[in-house]
Image (cartoon, rainbow, N blue to C red; front, top):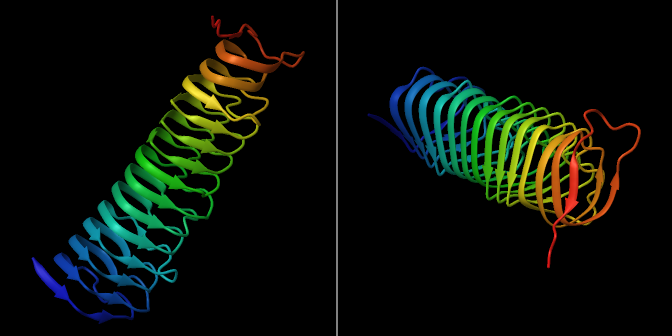
Length: 283
């Protein structure tokens, strides 16, 4: 394997069409597209300041690297990527890709990140700020995500999220096949217009959660006291632990909780309008 080490590179495409190389302690200063149309790279201990540094790369391992705010839109059309122990301060990363793995990565400007990624694996990842991460992505598995970005996971399919903390709004909209396990999700309008959503051992907060959902399953979850108008126009089977303050017009299914503050079933309910709602019979 070719070793390229301890260099400062700038300008346009300084490493264009580099294949089978280890890049170690490289600083990319200015210009654009420093690493483009490359393959089989190890990128270790590097710093990136120029724009679009990793485009059209196949099979790339990136570790212990830093991406500055100027290195925006840095990793697109790059397939078979593994990234570990990195910090990213720029927006619009990871677009139009497949087979992407991140571990112990902090993204401090997560604006429009992870768009149209097919096959995404995240472990111990932090997202800060920005809007619409994960838009239109498929086959996503996440363990220990800490995110305060807005509008996360929209138009996604086949998503599993475990052991995560998500503070957001309008999350998991128009998704299909979503499972959340042992997660804290705080944000209004959770999972509207989605299909096949399952939540297990989760703690949920926000207004008008889980409305317009087709085939919603809630197992051993809790709801914050401020949650209201939950399950409107959803088909739902829910086992709720503790109290839920307000349920409104579920379409069908079965909801059981330890206690319920109020239930709204009005003329706007949709057919078949046969949801069974009850409190748990405790001795």
